[in-house]
Every structure is written in C-alpha cells, then in structure tokens.
Length: 229
Image (cartoon, rainbow, N blue to C red; front, side):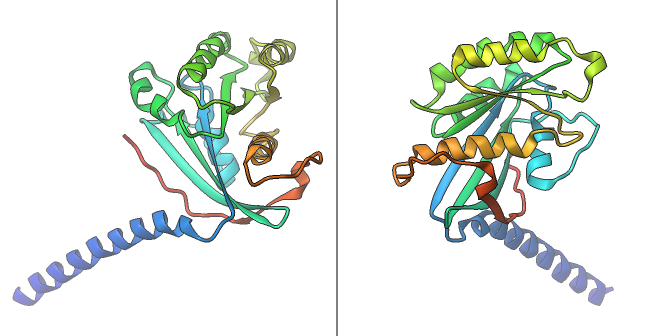
C-alpha cells in the first residue's frame, strides 16, 4: 500500500508537470522566429459559423454540431510571403451580448477584422451595421475588414442574397465573400485576402505591386491554443 501511494504521488506530480510544460510549449512555441506579426479578429452574431470558419482554416476540420464560443477562442500559424515569415493570429469572439464587454477589448490592436453573418439568417445580416459601429468605437484606425456571408452551401434555406451582401460590402468599401466551412468554399481565400491587405499596410512592407493569394504559403501549422474567459 505504501508503495502504491508513493507511485500515485509521483505519477500525479509528473502529470501536473507535463501539463505545465505542454501549456508553456503551446504558448512560447509560437515565438519561433518571424518577420511580421498580423492579428485578425472574427466578429458577428452567435451561430453564424465563425468558429467553423476558424477551425476549417487552421485545423482543416468541420463539425456540424453547434458549440457556443465562451469569451474568446484563439488560433495561430506561420505563413511565408515574399521570403518573410508572417505570424498570423486569429481571435474568434463570442457573439452573445453578455460577452461584449470581454470581446470589445480585442478590437484594439487587430490589423484585420472578419465580419460574418449567416446567409440563412436575415437577422444576423441586419446586425452587421451594429458590428460596424462597434468597430468604429473600439477598433484601431486603419483596420482592414472583409464581410463574409457564411453557410452558402445551404442554398434552399437562404434568406440573404449574394447581391445584398455585395451591396453592403460596397457601401463600406470592403471586400465581400460568401463562404462555407462545410465544403471549404472561399475559407482560405478570406484569411489570405485579409492577411495580404494587412501585410501591405505594415510599416516594413514597401511593396506596391499587386498581391496574389497564390504567393502566400503555410510553412508551419502551430498547435492551437484556447484562452477562454
């Protein structure tokens, strides 16, 4: 019995140590040398599929189950563009009103923002103007944005037309995509387009030539880390 107790004590201590090392590695492992860092933010009503888009791009995974984001989720990966390593971080914010006090703190410092709605939910589309007001109130000056109509694979349930989304994006002078995390439609294009827009605005980027998403490549897919509040 004494031997068993000692074994359990040792194993428990080892487990705690391993968890601590894993957390440190996941966080500081993202400090691998890079030339530029770009921070993106995802906003939109609850249930529009922000997390699905995030997971599809970073993990190439999709789940039909709806899981509400609590506070903020987080992913990071390293890309290469024109010989430079770009550390790309994306924060996925909860859409519920009760989390707004938490999520608005992430607006500042974001280089780019993905504003998403659900093409099968007109209410989420009508909320876009409120999200744009939040960006004006809390976002950084010169932040880049794209508007995304998600779940375009559900054509039979559509409540918002492509033309409506495009018209609203034109009104704000930003790029527009319809996307589907389920079948991968435009998922990579959304993140790459916004990343290139942000990269072009960085002080160290002196390139004036037209950029193309084909020129940006993933070189290291970092293990995702979640910070929930």
